[in-house]
Length: 313
Image (cartoon, rainbow, N blue to C red; front, top):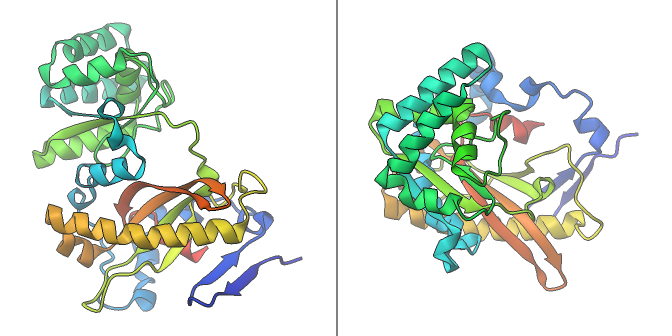
């Protein structure tokens, strides 16, 4: 039985919910990630998006976490205690050592203890990383990320990390970290490392991606909001679909203005207008007075960035 439900709301929004069996009956990654689409498949989008929307890969730098770190930290109330956050610039020489270790790991599937010890010694003796090293000596659990992404793909050391050794192992066995480092070295841009406290209350089943396509002079708007992990049920009966949706839409609409203000401040507004963007939010709690919602990060919006297909599913 088809249990797809579409609701047309008074505010002009259309909400569509699907039964889990409908969404997950074919879990091919190609269905949900346009990074895996061919040039011919992407070209077919031209009939949908019109002649002015770019279908090439957007420039990397305009979505850097560095631009939006303060906004995210305010949203998550991390700015109230400076011990909660740490930003460091990784020396290029050290980044190249990590890339070399990554290359060895990719070829052999192993990484030597001697290599890790050498990188750790360089970490401990690096003045730009002294604050980061101090944070990692507290025993707290941390979420680590770079400008473009987090090293969440490491199989040897998954997040969270709680020591310098764990951070080094995580970075040295992450393809995502490698991509970030190589791109920043090539572009001669600073390589940032960010530490935020590990958030055990973060529930990915109520994380949403908000889509803001390139816009004309008449204004910028969110055109769609999608559950990020479409196959996960909401965490409890308290998270009723309509309540969660209302919270997400209200918060996303307000956050859009904060993002645009930050873009103006950072000098990237025109680029975002040309290429569009997406941003992730998470509903952290439900209460009679409403709920707590936070910004997670800002992402590219483009045919080759693995985002549009989430709308079309």
